[in-house]
Length: 125
Image (cartoon, rainbow, N blue to C red; front, side, top):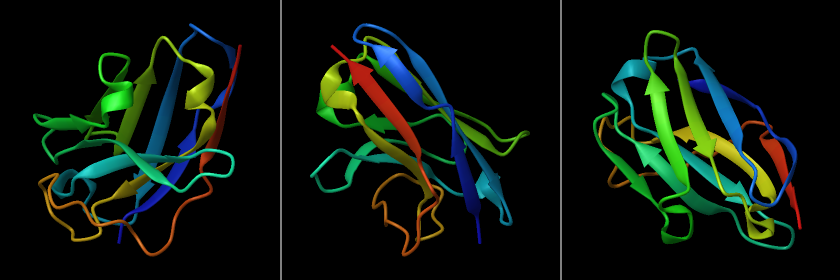
């Protein structure tokens, strides 16, 4: 089973950029779709972006389209989230997760039962 460790969060001013990383281990990373989720203060955890096993197909929630880019390096068992033009509404703990169905494709994307520790992103206005 794929286990993950997220990193790269921090404090940034509005309009700035951050690149999140998610290092995976313990499973067949290159055969499973991966996703990024986030949970803002007082909010439910929401889907942000996903990428299929080969990296050829991606999907984003509407609020981040054109600003965020998900990518993966299967040789390094790592998935990335490049975040540009950040706004205060992007403030959240960001989590990555494999498709709990073990599927190579993005849809349907099943959330895991257990999550990593996440990485905090804070965008100041």
